[in-house]
Picture 1 (cartoon, rainbow over the protein chains, first blue to last red):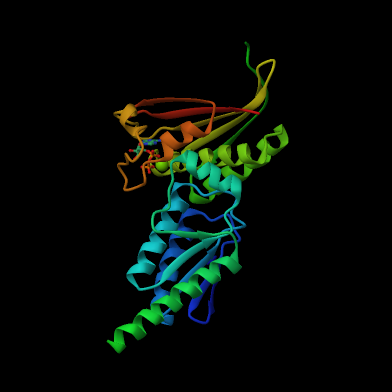
Picture 2: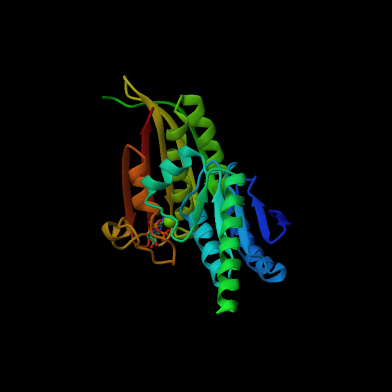
Length: 130
Length: 136
Ligand SMILES: Nc1ncnc2c1ncn2[C@@H]1O[C@H](COP(=O)(O)OP(=O)(O)O)[C@@H](O)[C@H]1O
Ligand SMILES: [Mg+2]
């Protein structure tokens, strides 16, 4: 079966969508990512969509679902690399991605995840001190 | 102005893979006709929504792709047709957020916003035809 690879980088999971996904493949990715967050105790998910030529309502819903499930499992999601024409089209389609953080590229996305993880650790330390 | 059809092809929409193919074929034609990248993306996204409706709600059908010209402009006309259950209330189906299948309900309304011309004809028990046109 065709699948999209999920890489582990420290406390984060990294997915780069390089194919034009049919709907079942998108749902498989959603399920596998959720399972891997639990397995690896991941704190963040980075999804690179720079190779995606469009985001329709199905893929948009998949991205929003991933972010929602990740949050329930105590992980943050950042979607990176959205092409400008894809963003413009999404707005006109009426699609918003509630709860999904976005960043320009992988580097910026990693910065966001790292700083989120850091502030969480600091909160934890403060909590244990008081 | 009389519409001239320069090229025409029909493709089945009977599986999820066919939806992907429909996107790719429309992308190729849109590129050949000379659409800008952002307009290609709009047309491909509208195609994806309508082809999915044909497959998921209409039980499968076909897409007819036409390169058209009206004297001053060239463009693409795309017809999605199925012989599925039809839509009882088209006005409602066009509203953002309305879905009978747990979807986001953005397919019809969204596709309409992404093209220049949009028409829908649906009859309960007979099927649905959606026609879109986008000009370069
Ligand atoms: N080809 C079709 N055949 C039958 N019903 C359809 C068709 N296309 C759309 N519909 C109906 O219109 C509703 C809205 O469609 P759409 O805006 O694409 O949202 P969604 O697909 O997310 O439900 C669908 O839920 C369905 O009830
Ligand atoms: Mg739809």
